[in-house]
Length: 167
Image (cartoon, rainbow, N blue to C red; front, top):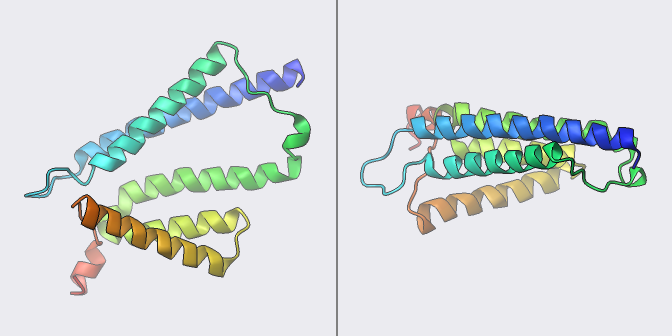
């Protein structure tokens, strides 16, 4: 890798690390604002808070590595230029999805948002629609079962389901 490319990677790592830190802190703050549920040992914001903390921690690692001059060893042939725009869109989808879930999970519900987010992410990475929907549905059902049955933490169904009288 040329010195110029290494500098570019370091700048990107600094930028991505700073975004991960700020996004992680924002998620932790928003998770702290989620009201607890009576009789539940953990608030619904507990796990998003952990995810936000991990994002901030990994962002700090990126910033420190870039600041200390460590750059990953990337061969230019390993990262074709035509893949870069698709990966950028997928990265934006991930960040936007995390923010959308954090902002809209009470109104829309965590599970419908997760289904849309996972399906869209897979399609952006080249998975076919039917396979993406099937896998996403299985993951959403697994997440719901893990949270409600194993952890005893119900996920917000969404105000619209409550308003329709479905829950």
